[in-house]
Amino acid sequence: MCQKISKTKYCPAGHSSRDFAYSGRQNHIYSGICDLCTKERFIQELKTCSSGNANIDKILQESQINIPYYNLQWMPYDNFQNINHKVDSSRGSVYSAELKNGRKECWNFLKQEWEYELIGHKVALKEITDSRYDIAGFLKMKSIYNHKGYVVEYYGFSKNPSTQNYIFVMELFDDDLHGYLNWTYLDLKWG
Ligand SMILES: [Zn+2]
Image (cartoon, rainbow, N blue to C red; front, side, top):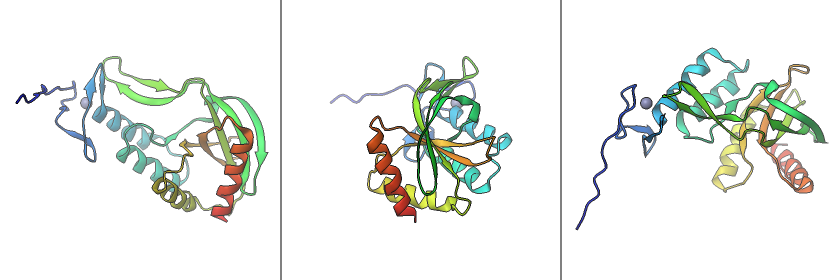
């Protein structure tokens, strides 16, 4: 019998690879990356960056505290380029766009800067034009569809500075028709 013994690693902030970064998940420390440093950086930045909407701030906070990677983030509107109108639905308008600078993936404690993923990646922007739209509906929908393993992936939120409307930043389907059907399906579920 041979038992593998892994050596405990530490980051400069004193986190250990034996700590838990997220529920049931041990802290990964490798090549300048420490899950706990990343998590702390996200939380620290949230304190100085408000979406202007308490519900959205709460969703972002919960996501960044509880989910490793693929969390929801606040994405500045000037990070979107090549914005193209796709379709209007009952709740808002859908655009395709590219993430000029990508989105934050993890904090590099050696370089003291963020590492980014999805640079130049195409995303869908769903701008909510219905003022009656209830952000709590978003939370409800997330729990329903995550439970069923639904495939729509949310990257985060933004705000159109021209209209002051909030935007859901989402996965863009390659097939326009498929994407359109999903939008209308979600609208029906929310209605
Ligand atoms: Zn650390």
